[in-house]
Length: 66
Image (cartoon, rainbow, N blue to C red; front, side, top):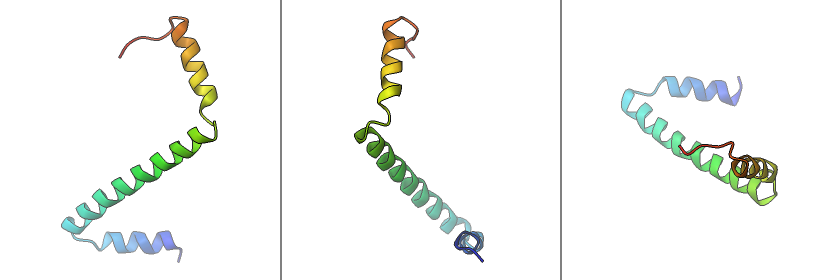
């Protein structure tokens, strides 16, 4: 049995209150991990091309305010 399968089984055993607590914890954990990855990508220049394309499109009038 994989770690994921074990986790799935344990999560399925949680009562509603504990499941809600786990869901809140995981949502924050996942969000923080995403933020860290974006930060790393920015620092090594992985998003530079996308930023340049967006700025070029904006300067050419191909964007709109949201």
